[in-house]
Length: 262
Length: 307
Ligand SMILES: Nc1ncnc2c1ncn2[C@@H]1O[C@H](COP(=O)(O)OP(=O)(O)O)[C@@H](O)[C@H]1O
Ligand SMILES: [Mg+2]
Image (cartoon, rainbow over all chains, first blue to last red; front, side):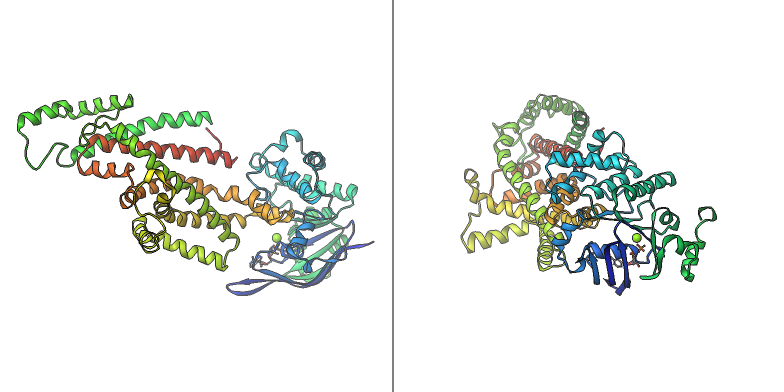
């Protein structure tokens, strides 16, 4: 199968008052088209910054070196303007905290339609049609009504579905989901993970699923990366790595998962 | 929204009565009265004057008479400007003070917000340092110090602008007073706007907007400003209060016949009705602005429930 993202020697540094912090340390990995890659590791291990750097949304004090070929374009060489034409269009992003990740003063409809109106130059009418389509995919009820609502009127689970909907507006090739279920209760978690599984099945979308929770990753991912302190400890087929881990750190991570989840 | 307005008006009336009572009490506690002169009047005449102005009645009755007149929109006769009612005096000066105040507040809001936003976007650049440096001076230097300096430089030294008089509201006559009045507010507002814009820029929903690939300019106009302007909306009423007190002095310095002088002269000469009249006007204006900022906030921030 065709490789969609090929990362080589990626490093991310942050310039802080305490000196340079190496958040990601010379990592290499690749994702095939249609695959779901899980990225596991304890918090602070560099999972998030890996994907922030690739898509150019690092904080101002961060910088990245290396190569990140996406669809045969090195993302790290693009200008901010070129990157912003890829983000939201070819790469969708879903963040950890649905409570604060939507613009509080903009209604759900506008937050959805602006994506395709900007990237695909859609008319408002076409964009609204697409918005209803994606809200249907993420299984939100009473869509007409919902489009006029503001984020504070929705529950965390509903907001996260809207976030997923936003990421789907332009039919992206690739979705990065950064701890998409961490802030949600267990039942909602299950429902959200089901959406990802559906996306894999019907849409042939490539997914990077970041989570500190191996249980979450094992439900959706085909392949897995284990990260620690900015480095990749182990990578491979998800089932194989989880059933017969080669590395001590992976064993340690697995020992933290409750018995019944295995 | 209408409910909010009605509720506010219902609170405004008792608030105004308390303010009037306070001013009324304060003026009576201060030694002397409107008709106290260096040379004592013959007792019979003083008696007659006091009767004419109801000053012989018990205080509580005086207050009652005064309140009932105000309710009819009559602020009473001035004790010192003979042949003028307070209504007439205020009407003659108010348009001038209002022009000055509204120009100053609009300029402060527009310029302050704009400078703050740009400083936040270009933070830690020369522009940011320049705006913050100048605004620090603007905060430290009060308008009554700024005004003479500006007059001296632009009025006398360069001779560009007239340094005093109203001249029928000529724009050139307005420039120096409006600038002296606005600069301290521009300084405060630009700093508030800068810090709230930086805070908004660092928030999660702006990261989402960036991840959606929204162009920078649109992120600022559609996602940032409506959130980062909220502290400025809350500052609207305090800013107005600042401008009111500032304008009393500025009008004196630039010889503008606004109502500021009535406030000063009225207080010095124990012109009870005149001082109360100006106070009532200022207090009503302030309450109106508090209401206005609440309405604006409710419009801008959907999380605000109007009760
Ligand atoms: N803006 C920043 N400035 C300095 N250090 C940062 C910044 N953002 C992230 N880091 C550091 O980078 C490291 C990796 O963070 P992250 O990728 O977010 O971890 P996680 O695996 O939990 O997603 C952490 O140690 C974090 O403290
Ligand atoms: Mg993270």
